[in-house]
Image (cartoon, rainbow over all chains, first blue to last red; front, side):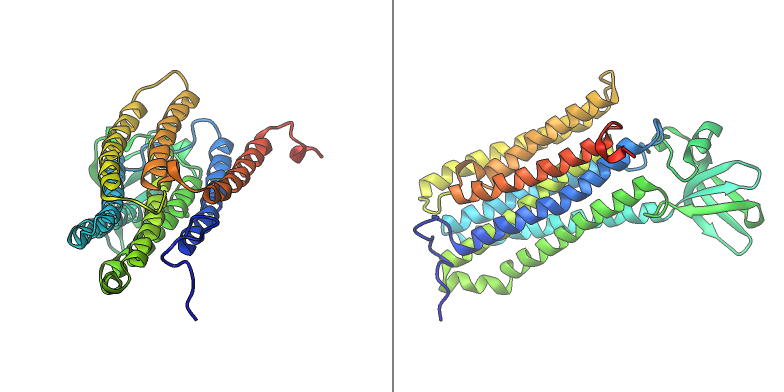
Length: 262
Length: 105
């Protein structure tokens, strides 16, 4: 049995099946990210004044990733336009750039995650707090590249997060003996509520980028055979995968200022 | 977007896509620049950053996702989504009010 309206539009709605399907799916995605955004608002507004962390993320990397996603969005829509203009070669080129952008985005995100997992807060028994990136760990001592937090920063830090600007402090190599350490923890999702919501939101978003890239990659590679037999249907598939990709870009447009700048 | 395009229509759309692309890049740079300026209160800074993000979001949804010229059924789906999303955000903000029913014992 042949499924109707995979290529041509239904006369009543003017839409083909997959288009209705992807918009219904995107509607559910809005609610998924909406729930996490409302969680963010609750945590942010609920935090004590001055205790919501600032400057923990690299704004330049976040901005580069935003530009990378915007570039991928234009190439996706240009790929679709190329198919509409019957230019399969250009489609291939634009989607290859999209895939490259996806790889760059995930690569930068991975670097940022690695940076957080090697970034430590070390509370010493004498009350001082060391904040920096792990250089070397042995059985007896730990060496980090970082700085001592000021008393008020350390007080605000505790388990709720701090508000220091890491870009403004001078970093030096600090070696501390393990016997002098009271407590040591990296900036993983367990560190404070900010890091928890940061990893949850960006992790879910990164999974969407990877999922979208897999679909685009399939349609760029083995799936592109359909262009020879059913060009209309193939063009529709590209449009639908593009709609998902634009949604992923749209989510990042809001995530970037909320997590990196505010 | 209407599913019946001719080559001339698509060429016109391509010009719009490029314009939107440049606008998005400029919007990103402005967002970062504005975040470094203090506008008197944190609330004001947040409002400005979200306002720019909304404009960028409109450009992506309106032009790249073709929402500006979509069919009625898609608008119907989106109106329902906006209603539930707005309700979710309203409930969140309402629960933050110390006088709301949720805090009454």
